[in-house]
Image (cartoon, rainbow, N blue to C red; front, side, top):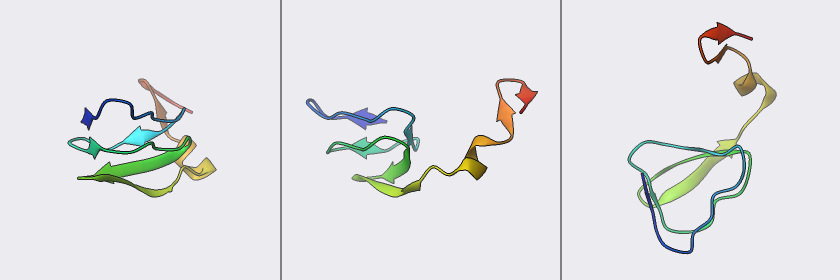
Length: 56
């Protein structure tokens, strides 16, 4: 991931590997690409599953 100077990424945001972040990305979204763009918001369903080495 490359983040250009002056760009901010919101809290709890997931940025895809290899993305080039050219503008601000809001909180609680999944974003990826070159240039990086928001793909979708993070939902409650995304917050289930693995946390570290344990199931939630």
